[in-house]
Image (cartoon, rainbow, N blue to C red):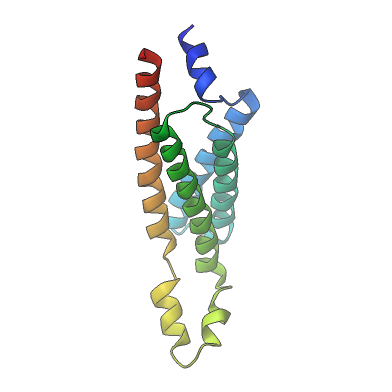
Length: 151
């Protein structure tokens, strides 16, 4: 009965969606870990992005159908974290393939220095921010749903 009350407020993923969600999270961890250890970076950067896409899409399918302003706000923060995960994956790929470098080289004589300052290896910052937001919102949403259940 307790699980049914929670299902009324937060749409739960089915078994396949849950598997895709967990696989996406695992690919993100494997991709970031291997990339940091400089093992097969040209491959694992794509694995990280694939995992981020899988994780973000499945998380966006968990829709909150209740009336709590707090949970709705936390779900919006989770959406921002998902966007940061995706941008982090794109920047990780750029760290290997330098496809954004051409945008900076056309900008003038300091193009390469600006690229290094603003883009190169900045995936780490976005990944850190996204992970902190994700941990915070996951914990808070669980707490808020427990409060709603008691009411």
